[in-house]
Image (cartoon, rainbow, N blue to C red; front, side):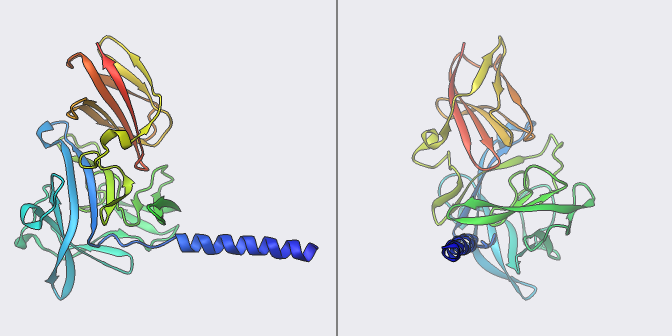
Amino acid sequence: MKRLLLLIAVSIVWSGSVLQAQEYEYVPLVQEGVEWGYYQYNPVHPENNGFIRLQFEGDTLLDGKTYKKLYMYKGCDFTSDRSTLVDFMREENKTVYSKKERKDNDDIYGEDVEEEIVLYDFSLNVGDSLWIPSYYEYEEVTRIDTVKVGNTYRKQFYINNRTSPIWTEGLGVMEDNFMFCSFCLIPACLDCNHRILNFVKENGREVYGIDKECSEGGISDNKSAALRIAHTSDALIVTLPGTGYRLAELTEMTGRLAWCAYLDGEAEEVTIPTAALSPGAYIVTLSNDRGERIVQKVMIQ
């Protein structure tokens, strides 16, 4: 009987190990058929605010190596002839290389191509060092775990004991310059286009977040929960239901963005100014670093 119980226990452990091994799958970052959607916010130039999208399409040969072309565009329909070419990238042995010149804007032309640089190295292990350009120093990879994206588990990489990952396999960074130059953008920069990842689609299917702009369901597909919202004469005070929230938005019922702010992930509440807003119904949306959203309707008097 003891032997039978031991065999059953071993079988369960072995089956669990096999299942976990089957569920984890390395997913390349540089591949066609994937769409990244970011919300872009510039506190100095609000005309730059809105959704931007990224896709790879087509190959080009540079210095004897084959690179994918990365395009940026707005709107729900992608065609390369109506999009902006923003990078040449390739991936080899879980390392992502770029040939675009590092500069502030997203445009790229033939004369911008330079020696390739490493944007991502998904082969790193705990204890390895990672160069952070905006800090001009190396940081140690202190933790690696996995997160479920679509039907697979993918590795997340952490540095300096941070609570949020810096990289996720197949997704890239969650915030700011994404593929253009990881960690090149200093977060304190005011006159910069800050970006936060809203969704990723693989072959038209959402595997991370929700495409609020183009999905048929709109905000009704988001996670609904009761938020604690206090009203003052000139603001809404929203208590965050946990940590990890990266973006707070206030939108009109028409879908037009009225206000938004980036959060540090550890904030406990957010203040939304309302003095300049017209009375009426609005939608408060909170987005966390796992691509989940909480939405709630609120009335402003």
